[in-house]
Image (tube, rainbow over the protein chains, first blue to last red):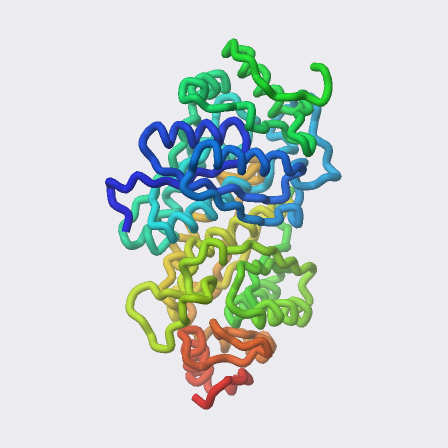
Length: 230
Length: 230
C-alpha cells in the first residue's frame, strides 16, 4: 500500500516542453518519478525519441512506452495523416484535438499506478497558453481524480489518487522560466505537431507558435531547429 | 452532430456471455451497433476469436479490435501469466481484477464514439453475479458518464454521452434468459478466464462458475466444452 510518505509518482511524458517541465517540478518537490509515454500513433516519431532522451536525462526510475493505436480511431490531425495540421490559429477547439486523449492517457497512468501502489500522478496540462482542449481544464482533472478513486481496487481500499497539474495556471513563459530555473535542457524537447524525423519543427503550427512566443517573452533563446526560416 | 433520433451505439464486446447479451439487447431496443473489442493482452486468444464470431453473427455495422498492451502493466491474473487464475472463490476483489480496465475500455469507446458522432455506449457490466470489481458498479458508470461529457469536444459542444448498462441489475440467470429470448447463440461465447485455444473452458474459475450456475438456474443447457469433467 502507498502511504502518505510515499514520494513516488507517475508522470505522463510526451517528449514536449510541458511534460518535461512537469517531471522537473515533480522531482524538485521530492518525487521519485516513473515516466509513462503513450505511443498513440502520433504523426511523427521525433516526440518519442525526445521522450526517451528526457527520461534518461532526467534520470527517472523507469520509463515505459505503451502503444495504443488511436490511428485506428482517427478524427484528429495528430492521428490521421489525411487531416493536415493547420498553419494558422483557428477558433474553437482545433482539429489537433485527439478524442478523449487525456482520459485514455490518465487511465493508463492510473492502471500502472495501481500496480506500483503509487497514488500520485502528474500530467502537464495547461489551461492558460493552450489550444482549447476540453481535457486540459481543471474540471476535467478534478472529475478524473474522483473517477480513479471510485473505479479502482486501490481507490475502494482507501488510496486517494491525486492528479497533480503543476502547470495548470502558468503561462507558457512561466513554464519555461520554471524549467530553466530547475536546470532543464529544453533543447531535447519537441513541441511541434509535425516535426520531421530529425526533430526539426515546422514553426507554424499551434504548438510551435506557443513555444516560440513563450521563449521570446521569457527572453530565453530556444535551441529548436526549424525546417524553414520563420 | 448526433441527435436525439440517432439510434447508433458503440458496444464493448469481449467475446463473453455478458457483452454478447448487451449487443442483443441494444439491437432489440433499436440501436445499430458498432462493436469495439480491446485486445489488452488477455491470457488466451479464444475470447478474441469469439468476439469476431459474435460480431459477424450479430451483424454489427462495424467491428474494431484495438490493441492495448496491459501485459506491460500487469498486476492481474488476466494479464500476467505468472499469476495463476484461482480455482476457488476468493474473498474481496480477486486477482483477476485488471487495474482500471473499464476506465481504459470506456475511454477508447468514447474516443471512437466522438469520431463517429455517436452518444450512446453500451457496456455489459453487472453488479449482481459478478466478481466484485469496483469498475462494474453503478457509481463508477455514473462518474464516467460525467467525465465523458466534461473531457471531450463533443461533450463541451452539447453531446450528452450515455453509458448504457442493461445488465447492471440482472442476475446471471436473468442475463441468459434475456439472451435466449432474443435468439442469441451462446455457444459462440467464451466466459472462461483461461480457455484453451480451441475455446474449451476450465470449469473452475470464477467466470466459469458464474456461467455454469447461471445456465443451471435458468434450466438451459450450455454448449460450452470443458477441459475436464466438472
